Length: 101
Length: 101
DNA sequence: ATTACATATTGACAAATTTCTATTTGTGTG
DNA sequence: CACACAAATAGAAATTTGTCAATATGTAAT
Image (cartoon, rainbow over all chains, first blue to last red; front, side, top):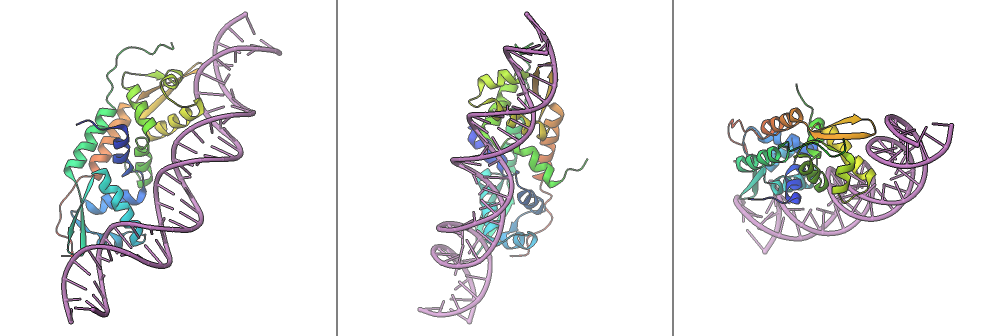
């Protein structure tokens, strides 16, 4: 399962905005409906919808529709992928010195 | 050691750009000087300098000056912090249902 | 069907980001 | 000192992102 550089940026874009970080905090207690998230956030409904789209695109959050409502939750699978990608990208396999010495 | 939401976004901004993802790949073999990175990248020197600043600000990369040269490498400490933050933010402590049912 | 409600989409605008060229700063050498 | 080289900074242009008001879509209830 190889991710492109582009896909990697999409994952971490989820965490590049303070509002979205706050949304993660709200989701830590379990699944929440959009309306409940909206109450807790200082933004309009379209703005929240926009952020939720970015979060779902990242794979770190999953949405579930139930009647009129959208329920969002943190995805353990997405989380695991993100952690692995981060570990992979920052893994150092020290192989020799730089030439510029 | 508590990080603000703002600081968290700064960490993950490092990984929000394809060029910077590429730089991580280049640094995986160990420390590299800026001039060597520049050779491998498709951008100008000021652009690389800009990206390196963002990477250093994130704490995921550290720079070391030696004479005229700047040497950059992946920071194991910064990496560990980033992984911990990611784990922390995406940790679910399931405490009850949403009210909107 | 009509109404009410929850969410998504559209379009516009402001702010932030990326990129470049030109210039400056810092360091070593003849 | 004067020159060359590496890297950073300044400033401007192009692009992307975040935000909102307005509107559309989907769902349930009367």
